[in-house]
Image 1 (cartoon, rainbow, N blue to C red):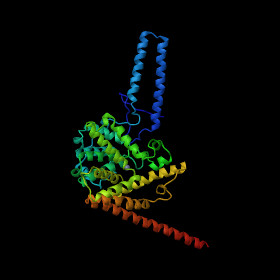
Image 2: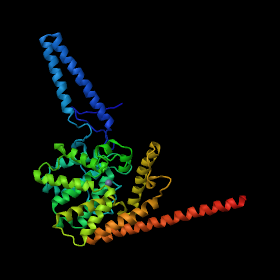
Image 3: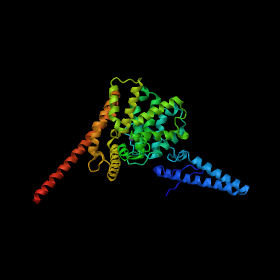
Image 4: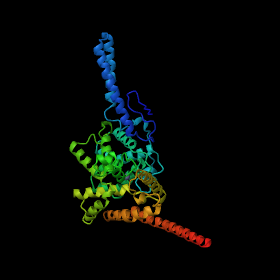
Amino acid sequence: TAITMVDPEGALVSIDPTMPTNSPNRAFRINELKTEVTNRLAMLEKRVELEGLKVVEIEKCKNDLKKLRDEMTSRGGGRSMIQIRDVPSYPKYTLSQETIEALKKPTFDVWHWEHNEMLSCLEYMYHDLGLVKEFNMNPITLKRWLLGIQENYRSNPFHNFRHCFCVSQMMYGMINLCNLPEKMTLTDMGILMTAAVCHDLDHPGYNNTYQINARTELAVRYNDISPLENHHCAVAFQILSLPECNIFANVELEAYKQIRQAIITLILATDMARHGEILDSFKHKVDSFDFTNEEHVTCLKMVLIKCCDISNEVRPTEVAEPWVDCLLEEYFMQSDREKTEGLPVAPFMDRDKVTKPTAQIGFIKFVLIPMFETVMKLFPQIEEIMVQPLRDSRDHYEELKQIDDAMTEKKKTENMSLGGKKK
Ligand SMILES: [Zn+2]
């Protein structure tokens, strides 16, 4: 039931970058296979001892055994879950000047690009921000790390590699628009970008509420405390723990510890269950914001990654709207499953209760606009480029809702008059 392609060194070869990563089931299968092979090896070794085969044969047998063992240990190494294509399969894209300019803006068309092109864009951002230089990154390691990232996003309707790209591109845009490198350190830029790139790694497509209610492995592992965000973060550091993918390999130990802590803080901040708490904390600081105060800067970084994570409605309607369909598709997948499993269903995920305008209006009015307007106090330049599109989008969905409502009203009266005629 499983086909594995390996190169002469025994490393797994990915057939197609768009293929979903292996499920844990397959990892278990590998483990089972390993146990079986180990048992057989032990039996063979025993036979060699007991039956006293000819010396030459024994030597040959021993060599074969040793080879097998070496092969198994070199393949083991806990890499069954994380697979990374090697760099040669990642064609070089030269970005046009037009693309480079567009990349800095929220108007960038994120639907226009295939995976390899998005990888090239992300690579460019790290070079352009001076992060490759600052952290003394090996450029090939950066490429391999990005491949590793892409392969560890699943092909969910919403929480997929394109969403990762959107969030990272918006972060790059905000860094530029708000002139963050003038106010914060390059380490901060590295933390912001890397947290954005990693923030939804290996998202299973079902949210924390589902994880907790269904008592999934993730919920049990993380004691119901932000199970998904903890997992995204753990996968991020599993990838960084591979020497060939460690973009921070040349960073001093103390600096690395600080970067790791900060990335964890930012990824954990993307749990929307903590939205109120984080925004309140930022509101208390924003009027007397101090860029030399570490606590203030950490809080700002948390709010920035939150902004980017839910920033689709900042984008032009034609870019933003398909994301609503993707999100609803993922929500409906969850609510359908919850119904069959007898778990509670949130109304905003229920296909019988939610519509596109109702889903969007509340979110834009009560989550997005208040958060972006708070950030606007610190960076007034985001009003025209980010806040105004949000207000326009709110108005657009309110118009759609009015049309929806009028249609329902019309149907109602039609039914009523029909009923009257029957009488
Ligand atoms: Zn996200």
